[in-house]
Picture 1 (spheres, rainbow, N blue to C red):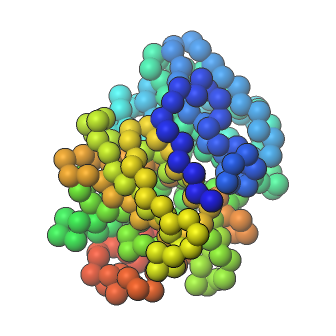
Picture 2 (cartoon, rainbow, N blue to C red):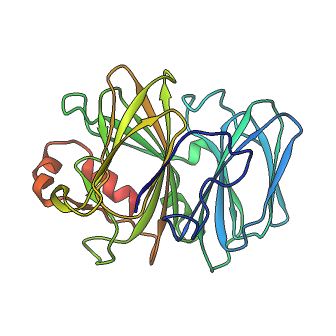
Length: 282
């Protein structure tokens, strides 16, 4: 069942590991480093992406070294600079500046893939929704169609949602493999807000609000939510912009196909950009 992880100092230890908790395929770590500090990650079962959220780092994997990765003072300063480390057994991240923070996203993968860098100008963006429909957000695909043929079933993006607006809306799910209508993906959301005292709400429920465990949780700056099933729309409170670092791992394939809740399917025609969003995930 879905799980909320409250913000904490994880001391560079994984927040989510495959099979430890509700997710069987997904990995997530947050590295917080001072200049000169380094961390080596050894996850031989997984393909990994290292996204520099703030600061700058040197990232080494598979005999390759990527220097001066990162440019942002905060997650609000344009798309992230990232390194896909592939399925190399060891990845080393060394901070070049103080207050360097690196999000490490991963998924179980048995096919070998080589490392490569994704610079900010290689990140694709799609805008979804509108202020009028209280649904405006922008999705920056760090690892998406730009990695076709070079990565497994891992998709990574950064979502920026306007204050008081919904995302993941109309309500959708992706917990059943029945292509071409839906494909089976686990998902992780990691939230940030501006200002940091902001908050939102994360819904997770089965068809028509049913199921044994419908839930709504209050999300705060630094929280993480693990989704293994169900519809999962998200809401930000008025006065607070929201950021979500998003990890998706496909159980059977790389192409994500969302299934929208039938009772709200009519909203797909009212909210701009829904089809463009779907196309970018395929």
